[in-house]
Length: 272
Image 1 (cartoon, rainbow, N blue to C red):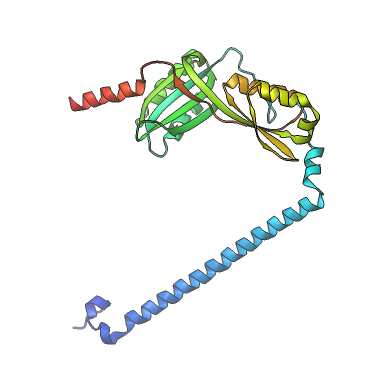
Image 2: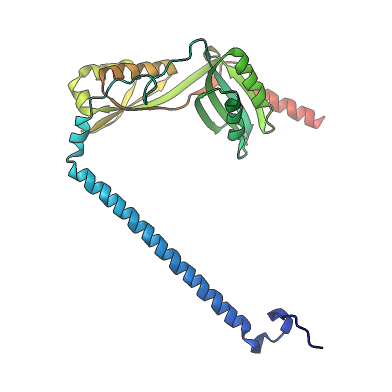
C-alpha cells in the first residue's frame, strides 16, 4: 500500500537525482535577495528623507542670517521665575532634604523597583545618580528627596525589602560629603560687556571651559549651595542661556563602611 506521507530529503534517500532540495534552496536565496532589496530601498528612502530634513533646517537657519547675531539678539535672558524652566523652586517648607544611598545587585529592572517606592508614596525625586561601586557586581544609587523624617525612614525600609537590594540608608547633609557639577552657558557679548560676570565666576572658584564669539561655558563643581548660588547671581545679571547640573555624589563621613559590614556578615551566615 502506498503511503500518503510526504517524504523529505533525508527520508527519500535520492538527493543525488531528485533535485527538490536544490530548487528549494534557490527559492530561499531568491526570497533573501528580495528581502535585502526591499530593506535597501527602505533604508535609502529613510536616509534621503533625513537628508532632506537636515537640508531644510540648514537652509532655514541660513535664511535667518548669522547665527552669532541670532544669539546676540537673544542674549538678554529674562530672570527665571518659579514653576518655569530654569527656575530654582524652593517650595519645600517644613520638609528636609534627605540623601538615600542604596546598594543593589547589578540586574536589569532594579531602578524601576526603587523609583516605584517613591511613586507609590507621592514623593518627588530631586536628583538621581547611578554608578558602579567599588564592590564588584554591586551598583550604587544616590537619590535625594524632600520629605519628613518618618517618610524618609519608611522609604528606606521599603527599598531595602526589594530582593536584589543589598542595603539602603538615608542621611542628612551634615552626615555625608557631597559634590555636584554644573555647566552654565553664558552669552559671550554679555560676558565681554560686564566685567562683574568674570569676577563672580572667579569668586566661586568656577572655570571657563569654552569661549567663542557666541557663547561661553562655565563649569562649577562643589556643594549644592555653592552651585545654586553661582547660578542665582549670574541669572540676576541676565547672562545665563542654559543651566544644567548633575545629581549629587556622596560618601559617608563614618569610619566604617556599612556595605562591607553587611557583606562580611552575610558571608559568615552563609558559611555557618
